[in-house]
Structure formats: structure tokens, C-alpha cells
Length: 259
Ligand code: YH5
Image (cartoon, rainbow, N blue to C red):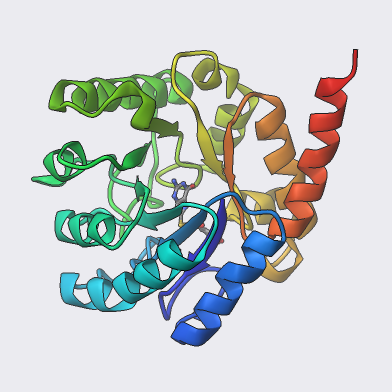
């Protein structure tokens, strides 16, 4: 899954794709580099980021979803928590709703249930503005797993078919470095169940903290982390550096195909 940020204050792209033509070009380049999904995000979930209005998110995201879902050979995912944005994105052709709030907003479950779209349910402790102030768990692996299984059960109860549900531990969302490393070390606790797992580790602070590297030097660490997650059973990796990650995954695929 290639990341296409259309937020002026995005973490790691610094709003480079806010210009629609540049965003389209970047999406096509990621598919050319091997992306099987493109994730479009118009709401910054960076720690401390300002909230984006519904009108602004619709304005940023929907025209791109229309173009890309018609023009790309791969499905388009939309990173949003707002039911109105979900509904418009699905109408514009999105195949996956990627929600860092796991469809907890009022009306969100119903919008996805009334469609054929798939959903990624992510774990987050707290809210983006404050989530990194004092993340705390008794058992991070068990708590994240239990939250995600409960949200999957809520989706099933709302009529979302089991083939449409993906889970994500939400690296960096209300988690310390140690929490993030424990989740990656024990990812099998999540990948060993019935649900496919998506992970987003690309360029995140945990990579920077382990290696003591700024954003622009986190590619190798991000690729290593994506490969570890895939080796532990993650089915989708959300990344900025598509070509590099696809090459690393090619090695995993070849090793797994060996007798
Ligand atoms: C995710 O994990 N993450 S947005 C901080 C960075 C760099 C990148 C400080 N949306 C996820 O990518 N959706 C985001 O450097 C996501 N899973 C899913 N499903 C945060 C991000 C980033 C944060």
C-alpha cells in the first residue's frame, strides 16, 4: 500500500502532493513501482495536528479518488474517520476505508455496512492531539488485540462481511517506543488469527528513535521493519518508499517459494 498524503502539514511528505497534478503523478509512480493499493489521506493524524473540517477533507480527497479509482489498475483506499467523507469516497470509487478510529465515529459503521467497500480497523489510544503524552498499557499486545477483535465483531454485527475486514495495531498511535517494539515482536498474536493484518511503520518515529535518524534517512529502517512485519504474517504494508519495499518483499516471496 503506497501512501499518498494530501495534507499540507503531513508528517513525512511535508505536503508535497497537495498540488493535485503532482499527487496524481505520484500515485501512478507508486503503482509503477509495484504498489497494489494506494491510500489517500486528507486528514493529518500527526501527534498534535489540527483537526481538518469535513468540507476541507472532501475538497482535498474526493477529486483524487474519482481520478485514481477510474485511472489506476489497483484499488484506492481512503484514510478517513468521517462518515460523510467515507460515503463520498465510496461513491467516487474507493474500495477500502482506512480508519485510524476503527469506525467508532457515529454513523461510520453504517456507511461501510451500506456499501461493498472493505475496511481497515486501526488501534489508537487517545486522540491524535494528545495520544503521545503518556501512553500506558498493562499488556499492550493483549489490549490492542482485544480492541481490534471487538471492533471486528462490531463490524460483523453491523453486516460488514468477514471478507471485507482488515486489522492494524496502529504503530505510533498512543504508543511509546517500547510499546511499538513489543507489538512488532509479538505481531504473530495478531496475524495468527482469522483476520488479515495491515501495518504502517514507514518513516515513523520508532524507526528514527531506534536508529537515531531524521525523517529523510529512515528508508532502510522502514524497509527492514516492513519485511519483518511481512515475515511475521502481515498481509499489507503501508509505505512511502514503494520500490524499495517491493524489492525486499520479493526476497521474502522467493524464500517462501523454496522447497
Ligand atoms: C497506520 O499505521 N499511519 S498516518 C509519523 C511519521 C511518518 C509517518 C514521524 N495512517 C497509519 O504514516 N493508517 C497513518 O514520522 C495509517 N495504519 C493505518 N491503517 C502516520 C504516518 C507517519 C507518522
